[in-house]
Structure formats: C-alpha cells, structure tokens
Amino acid sequence: MNSALLGNIARFILLLAAQVLIFNRIDLFGFINPFPYVLFIILYPVNGNKSGLLAASFFLGLLMDMFWNSGGVHAAACLILAYYRPAIFKFSFGLSYEYQTVKLNDVLTPERFSFLLIAVVLHHFVLFVLEVFKMSFLWDILVRTVLSTVFTIITCIIIIYIIKPNKR
Amino acid sequence: MQQIFNFVLKNSNRLLFLLLLVISLSLTIQSHSYHKSKIISSANFFTGGIYEKINNVDEYFGLREQNEELAAENARLKSILFNQKDTTKLPQIDSIKGVKKIDIIVSKVIRNPYSTLENYLTINNGATSGIKPNMGVINSAGIVGIVDKTSKNYATIISVLNVNSKINAKIKKSNHFGSLVWNGKSTGFVQLIDVPRLAGVRKGDTIVTGGQSIIFPENIGIGTIDKVYIDDETNYYTLDIRLFNDMTNLGHVYIIKNKDTEEITNLENQSKKDE
Image (tube, rainbow over all chains, first blue to last red):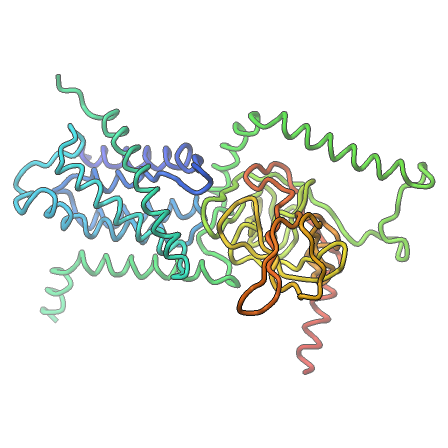
C-alpha cells in the first residue's frame, strides 16, 4: 500500500460522504446543487494509473446515481470527465504538463482555475443533458449547467483551500 | 492473434472507457423509460439505510411543523366525526359490503429530492409492510405520488413533481376530467391538461383525484386552479394548479392499498385478451 493509493481512497470516501450528507441537500432555489465530488477526478494524481481513474470515476458516479436515483447519469458524466482529463490538462497547462509536477491543490493561478472551470463545465453539461434527456428542455439544461457550475466551482475552491497542505 | 492482443493492450484505456460508457448510458436510457423499473435505485439496503440514518437526525428539526400538521388533521377528522348524526356509531366506509375496501399504510419519507425533472422520493417501508408498485401515496394535505419500486424495507415513489407522472384528476365542482402532469418549472405548481372547453373553470376552483383510476380513491385534494389558458395545439384547457401540499417539505405519508386492485386488473387483462 503506498500513500498515493491510500490518499485516493480517503478522498473518494470523504468526498462522496460530503456530497451525500451535505451538498445533495442544499437545493438552492429549488434546483441548484453543487457537485464538489468531481474534485476526486480533478485532484487525482497527474501521473496516476489511467485505467484506475476510469474505473474509480465510474464507481464514484454509480454510487452517486444510487443516492440520487438517476440511473447512470453521474457515472457517464464522471467517466467522460475522467477520459478527457489529459486533454484539459494539455489545454490549461501547455503541452509539457506531464513533465512538470502539476499540483492542483495549491494557490489558485489562472491555469488552475481554467482547468477547474473546463472540467466542471464538461461534467455538468453531460450530467444535465443526460438527466433531462429531452431536447425541448435545452434552455433548462443550459441554465442548470451554468448556475450549478458557479456553485460547484465556489465550493471546490473552498474545499481546496481547506485541505491545502500548509507549507509556511 | 498477436495483433489483436497488441491492439487491446495499446488501447486498453479507450476500450475500458467505451465499455463503461456503454454501461452507464444504457443505465441512463433505461432509467428514462417509464415502464421499466430501475436497476440502480435508492430503494436498496445500502443507500436506503444511509438515508434513514440521515433522516433520523433531520426529523428533529421539523417536529413542530409535523405536530401542527397532525393536530390540524386530527381537528378535521374530529369535526367530521362530531358532525355525524349519531356520534357513538363510527362511520362505515363501504356500508353496502360492510367491509373496508381500502387499507392505509403509514410511512415516512426519508429522501425527498425536488431539484431534477424526474423526482423520486424514498420511504422507509417496503414489501414487508405490504407496499406494492402502483399504489397511491398521499399525506394529510393531498396527493404526493405513486409507488414505483419496492425492496424489502424501502420503496421509491414517483412524485407528482416528475415530468413522467400522469394522474387522473377532475374539477371538483363540475366533474370534468383531465390529466395531471408537471412541466418541470416550479415545485409549487402542477398542470392539469386536456380539460374540455365545455368545463366551466374559474380561478380558485378545487382539483381532486378522479374516480377513473384504481390507484387513488375519488376526491382526494390536489390543489386549486391558479391560471387558465388554452393549449394552441389541442384546443383544450391547460390549468396551472397550486398544490395543497408543500412538496419540498414532506414528513409522514399514507400509502393507499386498494383491496380490489388485483381483482380489477385481472378482470381488465382478461377482457383485453378476449379482444
């Protein structure tokens, strides 16, 4: 057992628990919920095992679906985010991201913020398209995506600042 | 053979991704079709148990409202009782047969989402308490939904706030029927569609369940008419109904168990077969 694996397992359980116990119950204005559990996929080590990430994201999403009663919506959204994560990394941090040690849970720079933003928007858009599943509600999908993205990013940044290892 | 292996090894991530994506998409599509029950649902032992634990804590914050609701219902029932001609004689529900047709099971909502378009409640009673799919669910104020899926100790309910739900309802005053649906916009309002233009509808009229379904008994309160407009395509009335119930705050609910359901459905299936 290495510490990276243990850290991932702990993050998986803690984020899922926080999502189910706290964030699923916010229901701001009746339809806005932040989904900070996607932080698991975002904070997964850059050079970590890719198939491991895919499988873990799928099960994270499936567990969310069980709690949320939504079929396979979260599983699909998480899976797509996990699969396209390297591409978003490349876009936000430049081509050489694999050789640098990209640390996400640190002070917020424009690169980190753009990565967070693109990842959350991708996840939420897929999520709401699949959840609503009717093109006649397209406007509804966009409104939900935008509003939920704002709240997810705010909670994500707060969580990152809370769990950030203190170096000073 | 070697090449196939190489291909699989080289693209293992992509293949894993596609496999899992197919699984999740098929679960999604299956969950959107109304008539199939879900594989992944919160009516299982694990999630149901966790929700019950959460609800046990949560319940204490709503005790005052729960008490007030119960007191109001008691008062209403007492007033019905005292206004009987003979107060010592309890009213018989079905006086012709002398037996009760309808059983009521009390249960508690342990999860009540209302932020999506397809909302499913979870309650903490299931098949062991005699709950079966397609039973009606009400509370003291009015209609709540229909039982969707049951496990041993939990059941999920299609809330009236679900774009897939369709319930037979009527205008209390004029007995005109329509279908109760939800357009997904506001948690306080549902829509009654396909009301004939002949029906005299006025703002404030009461909407109750119709007698055409075996799921709900007749005359259970739903809400009052808030807005009337004419559907451009069908030329029928569409009514905005303000719900009696606050769907965002549900505690105890009653599940209606109609003893004749089986008999009626059997009979209907038989006549369908004969056609």
